[in-house]
Image (cartoon, rainbow, N blue to C red; front, side, top):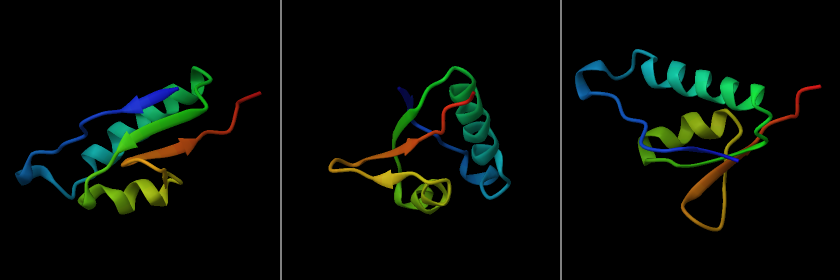
Length: 71
């Protein structure tokens, strides 16, 4: 299981893809390590990005992504 905690971008550097690139790299690393579940807590600003990747709300404020297993 993986967990994404505290993704933040300085206000002056937002909307340039920095957080997206970091989280995509982390998800790739998790997948290579055969992690199949990733939880995170998203702010309202970040929630739409995480939903677009397939994260879904859970019964708690945590969102979850189930990654496909690599062969």
